Length: 385
Ligand SMILES: [Zn+2]
Image (cartoon, rainbow, N blue to C red; front, side, top):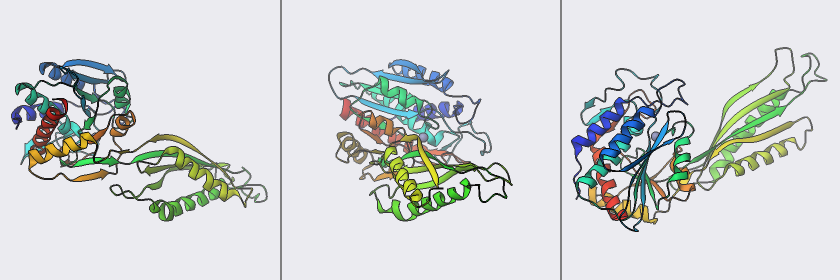
């Protein structure tokens, strides 16, 4: 089996955790992905890869590295995001990359610089092992996953591959599905009038109360009827609400913003149609009730078949490296893999374990980082070899 240089892989991870790459979309004025991109570019160059920076916003480049295959074998993309969330709720030195009891601590260690270190550790091992790929091995280090995913949106315009592995943390289990989401705005229209004039005014806020009650029914009775073996049921919740003009005035409008979490086969358009029908039915017996709905943003979920070649290849190398059958699961949270999947690249998620994504204490298990590096290296050998 291929030998992973654990010291080198640890050093890669420490270097990356020490670089602040907080997403400026999430935390205005923060460092962004420029410095870590330059570090990744020079590290990939030191591994003899062809490297290119792909600007996704000012000083926020993706790093695209290519190990050109010698022939016509299958190509593989190993990918992950370089940005992190903020540190408002954290304590201590957040960027010292301290190691304690096999855990490496710091913002981004778990989500997801540990996964990036696995990729680099795998490539370093393949290089020093004298591996010669037939198909291309691509590395995609992308910006902005924690906000709007402009990084992966840009990446799929440049990189075509026969499969991809996204190394978001999965505790070395194989994630083959995750949910999508949709954001909608519902507006109820009332009629503004002096607070005493019940004869004239139409109260848009109480009308929104009916919408909220319909949402509750949808969440409790309707959505649970759909079930996915790995993801459970879809869900909806109210996110933001605003409306009203003053204490002594009938409100002329009320706005509610909601979020649906979707199963992989559900689309934003379906949710929009569901709400259009619901609102139309609610207005059927009450001409005063006026409401409409818009779909503001939508990202699909992901599902890759268990017998997809990349899942099989990963399965076999997990058995080979760990001596155990891998576990399969689905993730509720949305990930960049949906964009890769939609672009036609069969994508699976596999990364190290740890704890504390977006939380006050964050760490990644170093042994998992090394295990993932081994699995990625072995999978690359069978896939691109
Ligand atoms: Zn992540």
